[in-house]
Image (cartoon, rainbow, N blue to C red; front, side, top):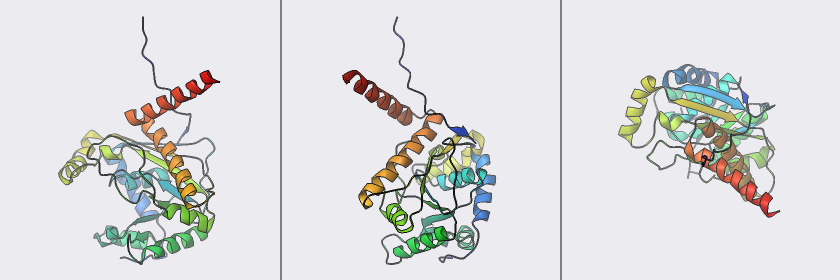
Length: 261
């Protein structure tokens, strides 16, 4: 009698205006922590023994318009209220833009001579002991489905910020936000409208900090690998096929190496 091969379990974890003002980012984090439970069931884990030290860079994967709120809510539960680096266009959104400005969050002007100012502001925030949340992919995936997938190509900003400041990088993986909103505009609106009824499962995993070394390309590759690992842990918690398949492939590769040896 044949038996189905089960994917290996994921590793054990611990459950748990267009200017920058010198404010505290707590309001946005607290609002996220209040609103997210109405749209989904959020759970949070960390690598065993992980601590979030002042002056750290938080690097998260970006899959949905909803995931910044999910990540902020999760970090708030861990006692962290980071400064967020976000697309400058958000500062033009009524109410949200003012909240971003008052909280001292950092607008990123992509493809603009002002882009360098975002790294200057982030470096200053880190020097002040604040934690900075950055989305190194620099945009959302173009996929229309709600399924999870590994993080895309990272831009160089994360590596340059880490090199400039020497700050540790904390990989943050989130999964499930695409279940709230993803795809076409109509589909996204429908997702947000029905999420309070569906309340999909959401998970955020915070991995152990690391120090990036090497040139920009090497640092960027290391950072993406670490964030991918954190995402895979989060997505596996939700039973996402892409993450489970990655674990199975990794286990198969390890078995093949042991047999060859």
